[in-house]
Amino acid sequence: MELIKTLNFDETELTVKKGKGIFEGYASLFDIRDSEGDAFLKGAFTDAIQAQSVGRKTAMHFNHQSYELPIGKWLSIEEDSKGLFVVGELTPNLSKANDIAAAAEHGTVTGLSVAGYTNKESFISHADGRDIVKVQALREISICVHPMLDVAQMSMRKSLDGIETIRGIEDWLRDSAKFSKSEAQAFISRFKSALL
Image 1 (cartoon, rainbow, N blue to C red):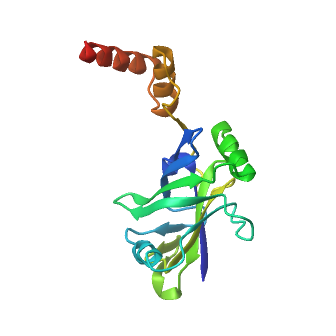
Image 2 (cartoon, one colour):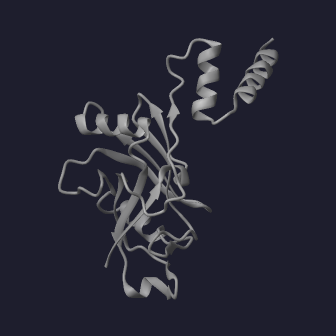
């Protein structure tokens, strides 16, 4: 049975290094029900991840358009205590990848979606949905527009490359690390004191 599940970027804690095309964050979180009532349990992706070392790699597409050219590649996919943590890279100089990076930075593309295969023995049905215990194959992880888990939003992380001023560092801390203005200024002040 094919399975497609989607998260918003903030829920996934996904960040993008501006100008680098690098994505890092969670493609899925454990024990959180989506709009269809389904939730992945810890360990659900273990077998699918191990299968990648001997078989076909998980693809990166946009909106599950698997018939089109992939827009990038996943550099690593692993489970931790929170969910499915991924690091991916958009294909440099690919026009669609560049468009998606721009849309992600602007906040008009807001989610990730996993697509794979499971069977009836791999989930537990409840009145309010299913607990997915095992994913046999993780076919792709797509960047997408309409995620199923609406509580999440995307955050962007800019690269430190090219930042040469204190103001630039402060802006980076506020945009990427989500510091308040006073927190960013206090951090910079403490850092300058430590250097002296």
